[in-house]
Length: 225
Image 1 (cartoon, rainbow, N blue to C red):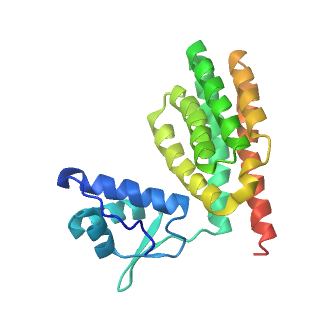
Image 2: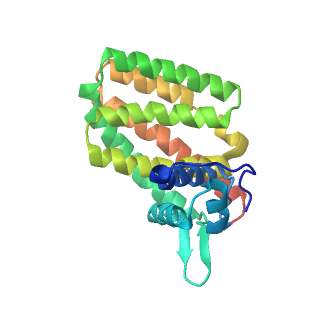
Image 3: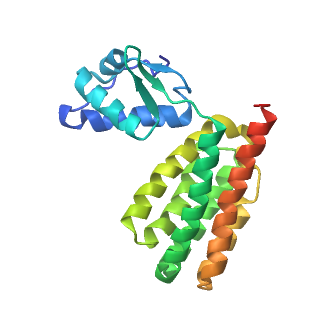
């Protein structure tokens, strides 16, 4: 299993969370590839913990559908198929639009300034072709808007959907990650928010995610699947 070579010691009371966070990051960024078998004893040795927190962490990842726990086989990283990608983007696009609708009345001048700063960082990461920073900035931009929607259930569900989207981007988008109108669309979202234009904000927010969905479909079709 291609995990980093050094060991990492953690406190027992936080062992599950540390294992969960690390393995989650490895799956999302492609260190652990789709279909890869995960060996719990290897993880226990890496983190210098017992197998119990490792199994607990893997169970939490299974609940997020990022790993599959298969009887008499073990655990493997969940594969990605087009139906999953399509369904993820369909509901994500709709819910991002709903979040934008709820957020518009709650956006402050400080929020606008923060969104502009994030988008500047996003533009730089795009120009520098830095995928990790670009994805981080993109998520931070949308997460601020989601937070202003002030609906904890919407926030929790969108976080899970965005997590799957992040994995898709890391594994499949490659150089196409840096192509498209995302910087300009973010700027347009900001302008709509400044005007308190609810319908405009919803429209551009949904268009931003629809563009990502169309990019994913084009990549899938180019693979000849």
